[in-house]
Amino acid sequence: MKHLISAVAAICFPIIIFCQDITGLWSGTMANDSSKQSLTYEVFISKDKGKYSGYSQTCFLVDGEKYNVIKKIKVNFAKDGKLILLDAALVQNNYPSLDKNVKQLNVLDLVNNTTESSLDGLFVTNLTKSYAEVTGHINLKRTSTFAESSLMRYLHKGSDDNDITVAK
Image (cartoon, rainbow, N blue to C red; front, side, top):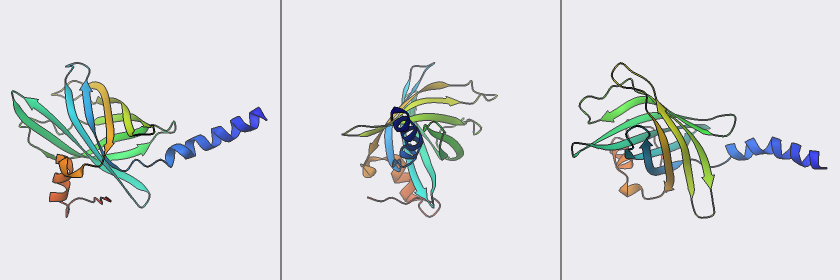
């Protein structure tokens, strides 16, 4: 009987992971391991015809000046149930010397408790001619305050060009 329960749990566990709702706005921080800098980070995930996609925004300060980078991201699940977010295309930025070839890979766990959901895990960027590889930690919480999100304001402003659907 113990083996039967273990077998059923092993079969159902991945199905349960993939059935969890990850769509919506996620806000939090991205902490850089080398600089010890904590950056504001937002992710919006949508689902259309069974496929996930999304956008991310990173906000940071350089010499007291606020900059942001918005990217389209690919959203997938790994076989172990981790959420994989990979930069797909640069959408908008106001940083004067941004290397457009920098790609960020996030490997996140979806954590659900009784009061809130969160995405927590590691990120890494690729090595380019101009920039070294960067690693760090991401912690995001699901939020419903779309009006306060600069990422959502940007996406709504250009909604003709973006394939977003927001259910409130």
